Amino acid sequence: MAEQLAVKFEIEHIGIWTNDLERSRLFYITFFDAKCSPKYRNEKKEFESYFLSFANATRIEIMSIPQLSPPDEGQNRIGISHFAFRVGSRENVELLTQKIEDAGFPVLSNPRMTGDGYYESVILDPDNNRIEIVA
Image 1: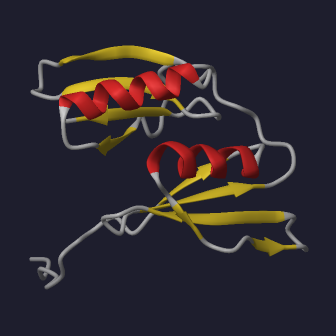
Image 2: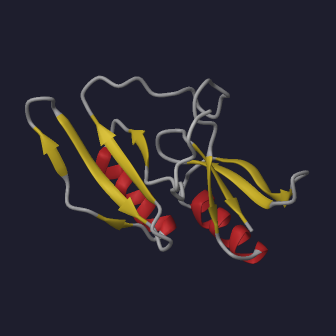
């Protein structure tokens, strides 16, 4: 029988590849109030990244190397489907969704009640990653 670990599991961070590190960084700072680390650069591997931190200690690492292939816009694919930001109220879901749409980013699903009990919208970030905005 496997021994149980005495640990509380938490997601430390999620890594996202991007072809435009600065565009992605600005998106998360502008719309989700991310705090950004200094840029990390590995010259030998041509790798660059930033860590973006959010109010509850959640972090996203945005990463770039030459010659990445973008995902199809909004299409389902194997791998991570989406991640979600809780914004506290239905009004905040509506306001943030409108702000993101006004800035020219795609809204895949306008704010609505879902079958699993969320009031949510679904948007795409600059690299076509699905983000749910939930209350």
